[in-house]
Structures are given as C-alpha cells and as structure tokens.
Image (cartoon, rainbow, N blue to C red):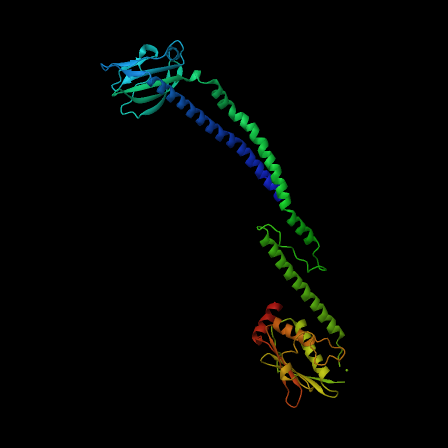
Length: 397
C-alpha cells in the first residue's frame, strides 16, 4: 500500500479512489433508475391499451359479449402487424375474443389472479411482455390480456437506456475531477494556519523559548496537538530556566571567598557515617553552610562542623543568629538580610536547601546556646556498616 508523507497528497489519493468508485456506481445507479422508469412507462402504456380495448367491449341483451374495435385499432392488433396482441377470456379460461396467433390466449390465466398482473413470456423466438386485467362487463367478469413484442418496443426508449451508462460515465468523471480541484484549493486554504505555525516553530530555540504556537484559527482537530506542543515548550523553557539558575549558582560559588582569620573545627562520630547521595553536591552544600557561618561569625571565633551517627550534619557559628521571623526567608533565592553588604548574592542557603531536597533530606536552623546559629541537614537514612562491607567485598571480587 502506498504511503504518503503529505496529508494533502493522502487526501487527494483517497479522493481519486472515491472518484473512480463514484464514476462507476453513480452511472450504474442512474441506469437502474432510468431502466425502472422506462419499465414503469411501458407498464402504463400496456394499461392504457387495455383500458382502450375495454371501452369497446360490451354485452348484448342476451348476455353474449360483444367487441367492436375501430378499424385502426383492429389493424394495430392484427397478426399481420405483429406488434401487439390481445385476448378476452372468461373466468373459466375460455377464449371469447383474441388477436393472437391461432386465436388462443396469450398466457394461461392463473386462478385467483389479482386485478392487474404483468407478465413476460418467451414464445416463437420472441419475448413478450404484457398485462392481465380483471374487468366487469355488464355484470360478467372477464380477463383481458394485452401483450407486446419486445423486439418492437419504442426505439427511442431502448436507445436512451442502452446509451445512458456510457454517456453519464463520461459526464460524471469530469465533474468529479473538477470537485477534486476545488477540494485541493480548500485544503490548501484551510492548512494555511498550520503552515504558519510550522514557520513559527522553526524560530523557537534557546534564545527564543518564549514563543508559542497560536491555537486561535487552528482546525479543531489540530488544536489538541498545538496545545500539547505549547505545554512541551513550557517544560522546555522551565528546563532552560533551571539551567540558567544552575549557571548562576556556579558563578556564585566561584565568587564566594573563604574567610584564612577564623577557625574551623570538625567533630564527629567514632566511625564513618555513610548516607546515600552524590559526594560532589553534598560537599557543595557543606561548603556553602561553612562559608555562610564564616561570613556571619566574628574574627577570632570558631565555626564547628559536627557529624552525628544518626545521619545529621550540623554547622555552628557564633554570629548574631537568625530571628524566628526570618527563618523561612533565608532559604529563598536572592534573599539577603543586609543588602548593603557586598559579595553576597543570596544564593548560598538556597543551594543548600535544593541539594537537601534532592537527597530527600531536610535543612533547618536553630539558635546556638551562648549565641550564634546552628544549621543542620537531617538525612532520612544511614547506610549500615555491614552493608558497606558487603558492597566493598563485591567490588573487590
């Protein structure tokens, strides 16, 4: 089966197939309708001829049926003319009058016949069609049969029916092809919004992430797709925003100086405390906490780093501490208590919180006894020592 990359090409191909089918079926259906109409016309002509004969059929006072046809009508039904015939029978099937060959009935009457019945018979090498009408003549019911030789039917009707299929076929195909051309023009007009949206989509890139495809004017079937693309662009823009924030965070780390006049003390458990996470990012979080403590503690003081066996890391300073009203604000990006202070962008603690969330940990701040602040990172679980040993053995072997 042929595959088309273009929707318009696919529609045109299917439309051409529909044209071929319609070019065959439409003339055939019209031919059947015309043939039926011609048959109805012929049946009506047979009934009219039967009614014409009935006008000249009467009954004598003694009860004998009498038929007096005009000369022209009698000649039309004569055997020499050979085009039509009639026969009048009683209900017993006895022939009263007949113009058929041999003076007999055209067909054998059926018992309990309906008032009007059409028939078709083959006799003497010819095909006959006719009608049988039940009529009342002076109180006596009779059957009137009228037939016509199909070989002598009206030539005009025969020619029309015979040539109709071919002629209508040649007329139908150009009309349908014209409709195809019109459909193509309509398709191209309706696809203009989609083409314009495609051109706009080509302009979307890292430098133009704010562009969105227009949903107004789009075909109803395409709107869900355009909406989904715009949502994907929203997610893409969010990713670029995160990348820019990460770049800003990295720049912040490069700009943050260490304080060579304050002391840093490290205390911890008797054995290593291992948690599941990324060493680089966790190191960055600890460094930011230490740098924050060094920035807020006075000269000659000590910043203490403590590691607890339960999976808690604390950084303690001797600075002014953090008021309760500000403890929810200090972890927000670009938040600074003293905006006149140079060298701080308000990103250090925000990075700590983000790294903690990445490791399913929590970060908190509290007052330190004797003055200062305690920043703590609480990890959800600690890796047991036997599990670490098993992992080392697996790595060794």
